[in-house]
Length: 544
Image (cartoon, rainbow, N blue to C red; front, side, top):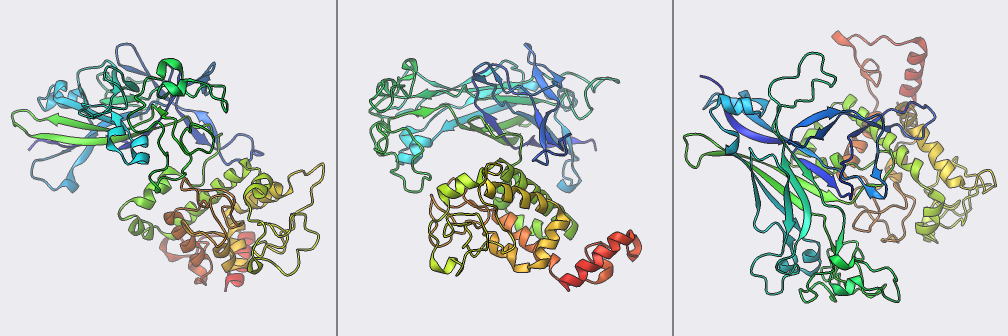
């Protein structure tokens, strides 16, 4: 029996779009190893292959020579693509035998399906004000949902309005807030011709859509367009100050919902008033449902979905964060603990090395001296202090977190005093130390010398020590940073568990033939140079 289309899925199922006022999208860029070995980061941003959308809705690959983030004062938006894929198999067969293939017009034609049978339903909403006030009437979005046929290749605008039937709609009738647009792109038939200038991984035939976010504008009631004694610059442009000030957002306490943290992320009528100025923005979350109506089978269709999260531009430089979106998803995905337990020791070690490289990149961006002064607990409690300060140590005040009397400080980790040549000694020490620990062998030595040291320094997920709050922290790693919930920043539970598992492996005596040097094919010890063998024996003796 011939294969049939038995399922659909979106690739990727989650994308992030970023606001921007320019009409030119940001080109694709990726992290690569820096060409300069003296770079503070393990990676730099470099251009990658992008897709340029042409006026007829088709796309052409291009790879720019450099990344351009803005056009004059206007930020280029991040406009993600989502591909539609099919799962092919024989009817009634085990799903494990199905194979994945790009959904293309030719594949649809083989199944006797017209592209118009493909439907995209977009539900885009902003619920920030609603969540703060616990008032569903303050949600605004695409009411009703936007539906696009698979043969419509024009951009379709997403206009947000208030829900129908609301007594006092936030967005008055006849007005709307643009949330961007969605476009079903035109496929180019056939596989790439031989000698094309782009890599074969770029498939121009697959059916894909592009989400273009809004410009990054603010909207509010008429009062938000007037300057105040505290702010001579109005919060909202006059032409965008059309929201209903009686809808329940303007003039209301902005933190009515105590679960919303940080509690001060809204515009106030006056600094510190806690009363909302009624301002909203054009970010949103969007769900895109894909439906394929099967021929000759009434009410029988295949479905898939993708989610779009729209945020502000990311002004972070070319360094990787140590807490990534992948780590957050792994931390929250069902079965994540089982998958992490199935990683072998080599995979865990590779992950740990990558983590500490990203930690080093984060530290390379920080003025640790400044943030220590701003957020380090001062003074520490008596049980957190050494009886006497570390000798000739320049971290002052001594009783502040990371100071010369902090028990968490390593006795051998002396910090130089401030000098004209070294104005930021704590920062210099942090960068030097983490540059060393980004090497997996140096990290192993660090753990082997004191197996409990890392466990003491690194805080578990969402762990808060006595005396810490949203403004002050101890020097437990990562120090002086905070989560979006305003409490001290931590690794995710997924990251912390893998790190502790690796430490347990490194500090547990192993049979010499299968220790950290690894076992070779057939069970024979892998060949090592004399110097490497000597280093291995030193480490084995130390941890044994």
